[in-house]
Image (cartoon, rainbow, N blue to C red; front, side, top):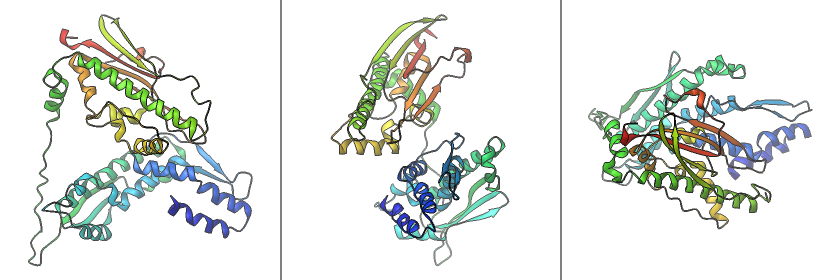
Length: 385
């Protein structure tokens, strides 16, 4: 962080007036830079509306900052820059083995890589000395293509995003090629052959009794996930009360988990309610509904966990593999979730987000106001639901 903020002092020293220095200070405010770094290291919801902030108010340097526009531009710029840390695990997995990625060759490939224009498409051109590098660059181009596709439709509904109309609409890795030997032969022959999982079969295995045996274990998984949510919130509460001096933060909060069993419209259900850390749309999309992912795998949680541990606050979650949620379907054939995400707090205050997930056949009219954390599993699968 010091490397990012060090130049600010120089900008302030050369500012033509105090108001100009105020603008520089507010633009490079520590909290704003951290928020932007979080965006680059995560998967931002580019369609989410963000407020317009005013900087250096009531001065000749007054500026309006369109945060949603800034986030979109930074996301595209970061993908175009091909940051080695964003290239995926496939490169790391091929370091230090018999057929290893040459790190000097990797950096040379990235330095010479370029995005060539083709209408509204950008084509990645790169010469690779290892198939893992080629595959990582294809994945990078695919991620950029997804971001550009999302951004391309935003100006139609968001007037503040009109400048984004001039961005490319697509990206491809059509010109990523294997390097040639002195004899003119490719250093590798890529068939894009990789081991993959048959999604439907694997999902059936993870949701069936073959893995868990006793269907009653689904209730245990419900409880353990709720317990983890309360443990996370308990750790965050303790941290905020001590480190950031929020003595009144969630006064009187204590973890609570409750279960209700009943019937509704002829369908048996079990409802688990907790007042833990909750989930927003991103957690629902990237963790809860993504088998193999855990809340503890999110980069912002890893950073928060390090801050907790620095204050002597430890958390020991039950979740180990991120697949326990699939056990719900050993007993039930529908899951409905209502939640409110308690986001990471800063000295400015506490932010919250909302998320709702339900099966497509869930009647829209039955959505209830979101409670802290509600998961309802219904329709007994063993009885045919």
